[in-house]
Image 1 (cartoon, rainbow, N blue to C red):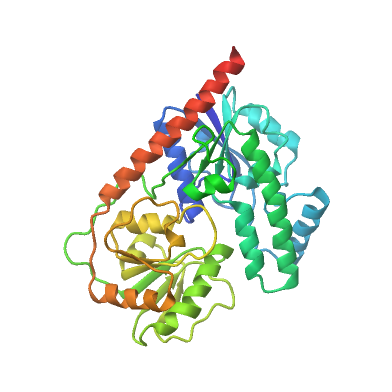
Image 2 (cartoon, rainbow, N blue to C red):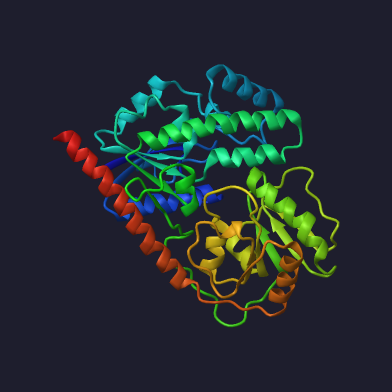
Length: 391
């Protein structure tokens, strides 16, 4: 079976975000199942595709809102209004339907699409309806947009996010109804998208690496008490970070050392003397392993938290919100769960004072087995449809 994996940004091998890590896990699982996978989408400027022989690049674009100039943002908003598209999809409309269709033809004969999230599928929906498809819902995007609207700092932002939420809900419903099967990354997302039946959808348990990590032997040296890393410019992550800094950190003792890595939006500060923002780091795994405990601080969004999965794979101690465990069917013994800020702070201090790592390899193996089973079910549904059409 030859599948065209249609996505906004093609893999470049860097795995710099949770979205890219999830894509790599899904593509690897499709190939383990015996499918030939050709990826089609855009590349980041200056970052060529990691697998050019199996990738069709439509061009290089930077779709990040936070780094765009004010004129670029206004252009995107204007185009979205005129086209009736979401802000996230209109950014990809730098090539025409005809150009995308010609690029698809260059892939040669194929059996179906894997429509990876709503951005690319929404931008070129009329082009991608000529084959059976599986829709991969990384999140319930309209719910995230609604939460972003609630957290927005201005009336204009609230209006834009609410418009996005309204269009995304319509688009997600349409993509789910058209798809032969739907993959979600969290169990609760199946019902939220109206595809809770096992004949219509399955959850993909993810991993952050192809092989189980080698757990550290002997005592681990901690460079700080707590380590956090993420793409904080993504609004659901920003909401969680704001909660942590405003509600949890004030309850930590002054000498509790917190290191926060990753792209940081303007205006994020903390009066706590132990908090340091360190920006981008070269070795993300080394950075998190330098923390005595990992705070898993999600309070918004849907889908799965890849940082939770990575923490469990590495066997690191953690304190998590209940939202941070969405999509995870197993919690290791060194993970404390609480949504109360005072209890969260107390659990962080207790875990940092007595570091208790566990072996995360069993968690990784469990995730891979479940991922492969779910992908196999989806491909079976897609293959059955293909045979019926051919007959």
